[in-house]
Amino acid sequence: MKTPISKRILSPVSALLQQGLGRQNLAMTLAIGFVVATFPIFGVTTFLCVIVAARMGLNQVAIQAANYAGYPLQFVLFVPLIRFGESVLGIPAVSVNPSVMGNMLWQHPLTFFQTYGLAVIGACVVWLMLAIPVIWLLQKLILQFIPARAEG
Image (cartoon, rainbow, N blue to C red):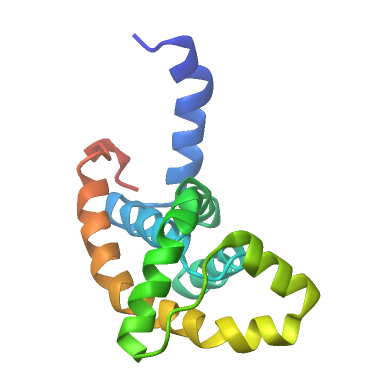
């Protein structure tokens, strides 16, 4: 027996997310959306998900749902990706103090981009190196939670 929450919220949301998708495609869409959510440039992940979903024929609602679910990880992973990127590119460490970064961005935008540009590029390089294997692993994990009846 379904609970009222399951009947009125979870089932309709699940049906919307699965619309036109088989298990494999839904799992791939959710994995991609979740990983794109961690891209180390703030303010671009929604747009990136739109582009990726359009190019790959993925469900826009499902990829955006995963993107928003994974969004907090963008903050959690930002500093590790910056530090790993600095290491990969062999560049000096930059301050990741939010107040320092924010003040510099608003008071001296050119200096901000000169100071942080290469570090962010390094973070993007690391993100790209990790994205494909993480998407693959997440897809396999997500498949475990999608019932077989979800085949579309």
